[in-house]
Image (cartoon, rainbow, N blue to C red; front, side, top):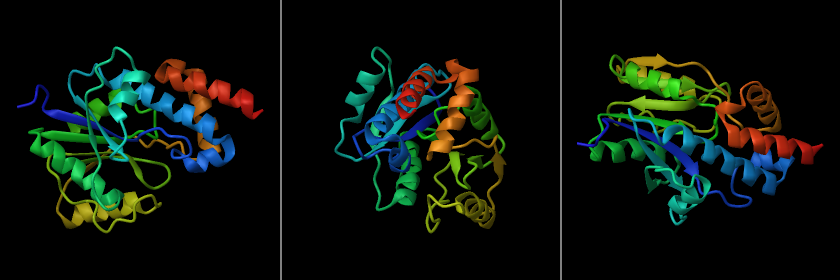
Amino acid sequence: MPESDTALVIVARTPRLGEVKTRLAARLGSAATLQLYRAFLTDLAWRFAPASDCALHWAYTPAEGDFAGVLAQLAPGVNTGTCFPQSGLNFADRLHQIFRETTTRAFARTIVISSDSPQVSSALISQARLALDEYDVVLGPAEDGGYYLIAMREPHDLFTGIPMSTDQVLRLTLTRAQELSLSVHLLDTLFDIDELPDLLRLARLLQADPGLAPATAACILQAMKELV
């Protein structure tokens, strides 16, 4: 058995110029967006690496990227956990495979989060973990109609046929869960960072509480100066 019975998996891309947050890059520029995404990964690594109640994992794409090496540069001296490549024909397949992967690694619970919301707190992860004691599925709704977190004890197929990256994801996932007779618990709603207004909103949040994501806060401050 693993040391912790819960796997926390962060879904991420290997940060490469022009390949991350493309909608945001259209306004912010590819170079500044790359630095911002690297800051997201830095903050997530520092926040969740020390968590004793979850074993940290990273599911990365593309498969040939040296994601572990990137993390070592972004969070030196931190045990950033286990990295494994995503596999599947599309994002829905890849998400389902993550749950299959952690199940084969003998984890009793799996929590998957996006790397697009660096403001996800340790408290939310703890809430998701505890909720799995009573519910089959835990979802963290995103304001765009998707979700920033999904947690399950078993690799139920809540993904096949769901049009990912649309505003119907959460609604259709809840319908699928009902069809499978799975109980669902919803966490607080958060926002992803996809467009410039999202970034400005995150900037205001971190201005009030920069300790929530310090690397991101510093990167946004620099990016805003250059944008102006």
